[in-house]
Image (cartoon, rainbow, N blue to C red; front, top):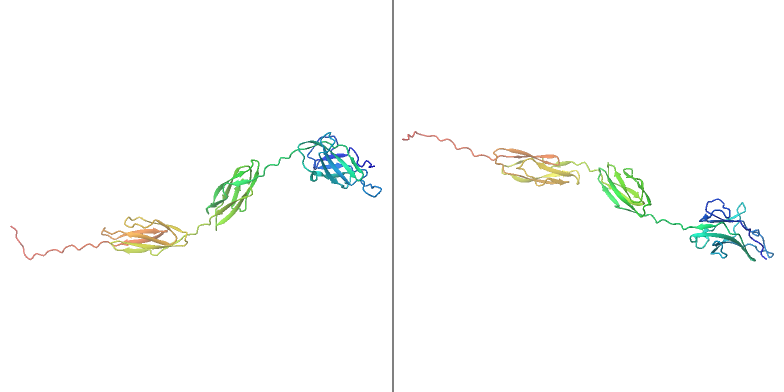
Length: 324
């Protein structure tokens, strides 16, 4: 005959990290730990030397039912220092967690000659745990290019759920973000300081996504030289060019003149090039001068006047002719 191999009225279902709950007290919600006194025969042997208790089974019942709706083996764990056995059954109970409802449990001590069952545990509930949808984010743009002088740009953050929180941070001190965090859909401003050197790139991370900021280098200091600073042109006029040499290929220049008789071929250019000009015929009878400004440098154009014919020489009479 199998002796009584489990004490009664000693079974408790515990919430994780909760204090011990006496049987019959307030219902425990979503328990994970079963606590019970080991059977009095926990360490006893049969006449043949076999263990009277080989394992403990956790049985889940609907209140008042006689047949369990779920059974899980707890093995034969050793008792804690206070003499009680505690087992986290959330990893061994099939169908964990069970559907919503109120339940009770019993622990059965099982051995080669039979089993003994505890009294019912305190009642407990399994309530469905609602898992929020994952948070994902999208950015309105992935990159921006900024002039060397600096500027402030904005990027919109769209969250998959209004409660999704995000953070924004820059990996460069010259690109600052505002705000540093937010919830749901929002806008992040990125302020870029003026550049003092070469082109540079910063990475702003928003909601785990990358927003790349590229800033142009400081423009080079541009200087220009002309192939000539002064020319003389005949009164008949002519068409010619002056070469412009720039210190860098990206240096832009403008050209202008105040003289209507000295029209230019173009009003601007980039890098080293040639500027064409035309000189109209000089009919003023006087030498004239005008200037052409190219990249801040001056070309002086002097045009000769048209030579006038000498007046006719005077007559010399050899006799006086009387006119009647």
